[in-house]
Image (cartoon, rainbow, N blue to C red; front, side):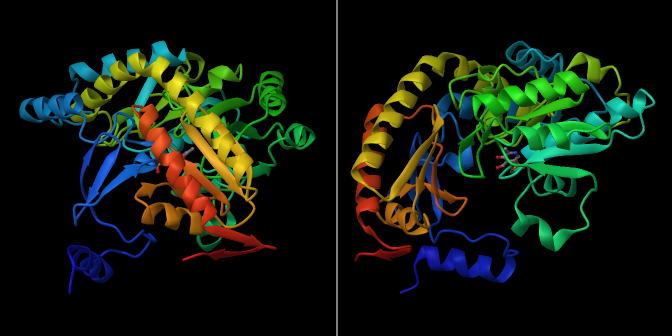
Length: 407
Ligand SMILES: Cc1ncc(COP(=O)(O)O)c(C=O)c1O
């Protein structure tokens, strides 16, 4: 019998460029932390579109403002003013302490903008040799040529060289390496306060302090990539605020639209002064629909702060319980509602066992089960997810370095 899932996957197999290795499930509807597939089966969503759908699926308030804006005015381009961009920029400025925002459509575009603004900062002042970047091993900043150039993973990079020159990668925690890598030709250091794609790896306080110290000492700009860890995910408006950083540039994406595509590069005034009309631009960036959605999301995030702190603490405790119970779990990492379980073995069988039991989590950095639930997740949903993970971990038997999945 041909199922609805078969029909969808067969059409994709013929016509969609095969750049994604998808899980064999077709989602058609969502509600809060639940997703429903084409056959009506319900799943607990602990990945939320990779850290995007922070208010949960089909949030009635967000749906209402999107519908209202769609009926009023969606897009006019950046040739003209509209009332919402300035309001959203002011809100982000209040949250970050950085004066200005440039709006775009994705996280990668926010990274591209910051990389360009960092070079422009030096160029405008007549400094022509500060064009390089220092980035971190295990770091991920996107797939376009610029963002890929500061992304460490060789698997993503190698087929696409030559990438932009002058990028030096430093291992997180290699403070001497960091000090040596930053030279008079470095425009900026780019770093995620918690490396997401690289395995949910928080920077150590010592290394984070070294980044702050080196940038201060050399005048090198600091770009905090907050696309995954920012905007409430860890309980802070921005996670860099817990590291004592005062970045010059900040990238924002994912959470800000809770599913409506929008990104932003936040820019300190000293950098903004060196950037001029025509230096950068995008047709869609900051249109009425996406900025209206983002304003609504930011309003909700404010109120969610105590909830995120409580749920984050509960989630951590329960994950630590799993670690105590299952020796295959080698580490519990992350903060707030951004969590990773590092395993002694490949995480894929655990992710697949969880999917079979109706829980969505994701494998990253091979051995890490990554979890990024909606920020509205309840205590009961956390308990439910932990029970499923418990079963998924129990189904994976470790023998030396090989994994066997029990039926
Ligand atoms: C830290 C970080 N930077 C940049 C990106 C790229 O963002 P996007 O996929 O929205 O373009 C991601 C996406 O996972 C990310 O986690």
